[in-house]
Image (cartoon, rainbow, N blue to C red; front, side, top):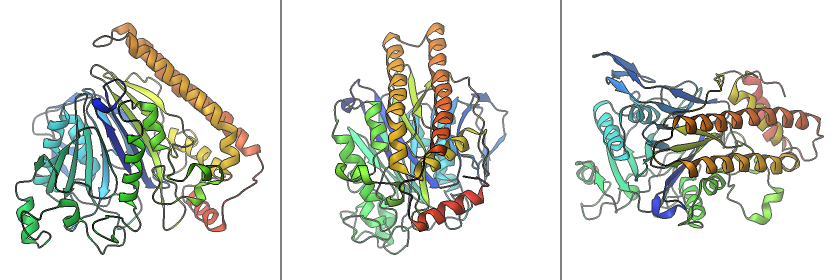
Length: 464
């Protein structure tokens, strides 16, 4: 279960657009950072998406993808033009197809093929109409399928796009907007599928055209993942999409007009608990209403496997990535566009634990910290914060010097900042992992939580 937030120019400190997302997937679903360069393709060629192949375009753009290791598409990503997209799983009254394009496929295709938020939206709904959306969406989990909502942003604007099978509705973002695992567009919208309202009335979802309310009318009431207590509240029993959307909206509004990337990082790290309870909190106590998501067992099997905060300026974009689970523990590191000046090769992760791959290397550390969360977080938090603040300061300094498109000298400086950030982070993870191994456990998680994580570790051959 994921959360995506965005603030457009009138709500940020520097007039930029800032998008953030936590990608919540099942605990062992490794999350990779991949750069795919622009490429020309032969006419009449095909592109193999996760489940189906579709015609390829003649030119695809540079893209940065943050994605589950096994699929074609991405959970969030950006391209060389500053276009950035994040998605959410949503469930509707419309049937889910056995096969089609995943919402994650739709994002990657839009990033590779379009330059602006509006044209990306148009590309997604066109692909929806032609190929539909469908297929299993999680690795090794049967029955995890869904429709999708998206926040689509570029340096000038952002859009929310919500879908129910081939039907869709869209809202242009006015200031701050957040989405989670529930439909959120009701009666105010800017664009709509030409047959959506007619379809809603014919199916009996809406009493009449005048009565139409997309979220109220299309949210199902009796499916286990997303049954609602009251349609007016849209509070879902297990996914808690409405609760998390309310949480992220409240947090974003606190800094309206002066939002920075650091503020959005803090939103993604939030556990949705009262401040006075933070010192006694641990991942074993996590609930589904938390933006920073922690797996606890059968009821909550997902965790935030990767996080992104995109600082989208006109001539340059800085994509702050963790490349690891648990943003509350992780360090955000900068990757710059239009040229993705990260030369350090990160070994991609796969289905099984690999101590040399970037995500699994970090994941072992996260799981060690969670064995005694408060004590171990206290050991590393100040150092982590200082490390991250250093990255933010150096990035801010280079942004101030850039006027227009970056020069070759400025690109070299950005290359160094990015590479140094990843190098320093990896070094610190090694140091902190050694510290964690030597610390005695003073407050271990409950028995059921330990059994759950022991099972997860065994499945991927991770020895703790």
